[in-house]
Image 1 (cartoon, rainbow, N blue to C red):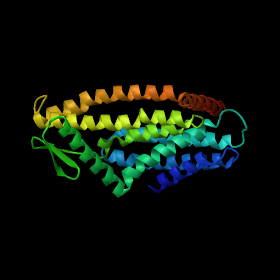
Image 2 (cartoon, rainbow, N blue to C red):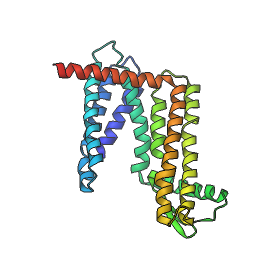
Image 3 (cartoon, one colour):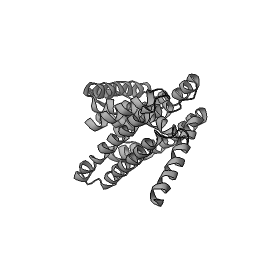
Image 4 (cartoon, rainbow, N blue to C red):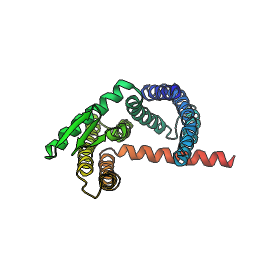
Length: 266
């Protein structure tokens, strides 16, 4: 994990240094190098559990991170060309990464967010008129059927993602950033609590067959489809509010294509 924290720290430094400092690109480049090291260390963990798809994805993430590092190191000697977008990308990666991994890896934060979501999911479930009880610090039960809340149930991944995206819009006004935040993060959190309430109720009362069948249908089909639709609509609203994000993404992809062709042509 040391490589990850070093990476996020370097990316954060790169994103907060003033534009007059070309050392931003040095910090950013090394940040992406350390991020690639972290990704390269992950495949054995996935191979051990025979999750070859995610094993391949983390290797791909490592290669892309190295390529981004190469581009950023090149950018420190260039006055123009739109390479500033990689500082915005580094800011998005550092903000999103810090939010997620602080809650994923720091014990008391992990416990706090899971217990908080558990308590609030119980409150929301009860507000829908469903008899629900808390059976552990991270478990709620409907009709005697307990559901365990884990980190993935807190929506922290989506919250971190949108927080990072919003932070990357450097030239956007504070009011537009706040608007983008309010139509994404709080909405995601509230919808997630409703998702938990629905899944726990469906599981407890066997709305779609046996409890296990009901859990599968509610969690992996109904709420999954609803979550994808909600994330699509939220993404649309955020990008409409912050068109700078689209410009950043377009700029990153454009420069990556140019640098890739330059490498392969050489």
